[in-house]
Structures are given as C-alpha cells and as structure tokens.
Image (cartoon, rainbow, N blue to C red; front, side):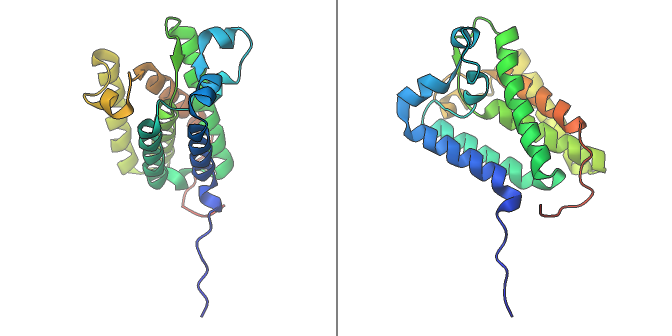
Length: 196
C-alpha cells in the first residue's frame, strides 16, 4: 500500500507569495525603499511600485503577521477558484490597492504591506462561496464588510498599528476588497473542491 503525498500544486500561489515576501524582507531597507508604493516615483514612471509595494513590509513582525493572514485566508477559501483565477484575483486586488491609493489618497507618501491584497482575497473567496450557495461565506463576508465600515468611520482596529509596527492605511483594505470582489465576480466558482 503506497501513500501519495499531498500535492503542493493547489497551494502554489500562497507559497510563491510567501517566498517572495520573505526574500524581499531579507533585502532590508534598500529593497523596501526600491519597491514600496511611492506616489511621486510612480508618477515619474516607476509603475512596478503599484504592485511591488504589496510585497514589502515595515519589518519582520509585519511580514509574518501578513503571511499568517494569507495562510488563514487560503485555508478558508482555496477551493473556491482554480489557480489561474486566484492569480487574477490577487493581481486585480494588488492593482486596485495601488491605483486606489494613487487616485484617492494623493497625500499618502508611501505604503507597504499585503493587507490590502489579503482583504481582496478574503472578499473574493467569500463571494465565490456565496455564489456556490455556502452560508458560512455569507457570514464571513458580512463580518469583513463590517470591519471595512468600522475602519472607514473610526480608523484602524484598536491594536492593529502596534501589531503592524506602524500606521495602518485602512483605505488599502477597502481598495483591495473592492478589487477582489470585482475579480471574483468575473469567474464561475467551483462547485466542489478539487486539486488543479
């Protein structure tokens, strides 16, 4: 009797994001400054910062907190879409964060972190689950929308700035969530969980 080890293929996206974030964190301040979202540099032609700012962080605590969030979100929702669809949802969420900050937060000098994309993945996964008829995802979506509303009216949740090691840009969460919802609505969700 042979036991087939579980395949990493269905989980390749979060593994790649995790490895990239960890490698970039090892690069220190120089890498962080070269890749973080900075409106002036983006307007000067450094368009990669619209996306790369999501992969660099304030420090190791911020990095690990976001990667833990990625693991939790993936554990909840990974079966909702296939890898290609998740990649597109991730890309659209990241781009929504960068473009949203550029368009609606002109006073923001710089931004780092994966949390906006995480909100996009969470909302995207919940939307996929709701479209499949899963009530649990509806409850989770209501909870995250409530959190986003709280942040828009009252600012970051108490203690989140301390955990991140710096100010929380709550608008990035909103833009990522909108991007994730939009992208998720483009795809027909899976009716059952299978490996790619």
